[in-house]
Length: 281
Image (tube, rainbow, N blue to C red; front, side, top):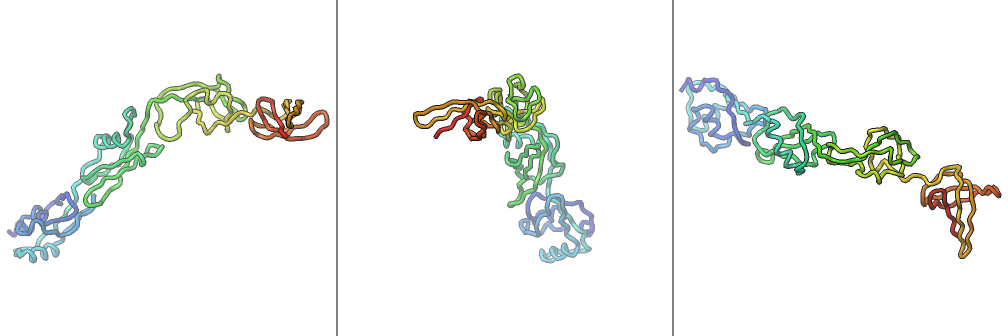
């Protein structure tokens, strides 16, 4: 009995939120008489230890009516954990992604032991940079953060610049090309048709090979400063047409400033198309 009481024991692994009498008895048989369901304290967090020192063990023994012939060595408990592996992560990532045609590559992950519980990932936890945050839910309303760095792609088709694109200049079909390959499937996607960009202009300079996104494009200007513009004036049944010189540039529907070369007067008209404007009275 004395030998059992003084033995130095390794940490006992437990798989729950509380340390019970059965756990203490498993760590040291001298406590076999304790009620197996008796709660002795909370279980440690994953990676931590819960140590019962000799004084605390003596108190537990006395309460259980156990007489000791010698002082007890301390007993420690740790929560059961398992290593996190790509093989363990992959099915949860696949289920959360819910894209059968997507390719998932796990580049890195939380290299920590995790408690036994339910691994939980959602698409909301995935950033465009590929960092995917999740959790392990265990015990009674407890959880532990975990993460994976991933590369997720699907086969897509998009439009990119085949030549430099300058702001303010209409895009020609020859300056664009259609490309297919793997891309990240979420977030803003490049345009997929050359017709969506041809004839329009970009808001900033675009380098060859750069994908074209819808928010990079605006309608090209139909009139540039210095252009000769055909102006149509309507007032009831009366109609008049003449030419003027544009003082500002504009797109369809916008007002521009023009100058009448015959009398030198300035006036405004609304852009109707290429080198065409109108005034309605």
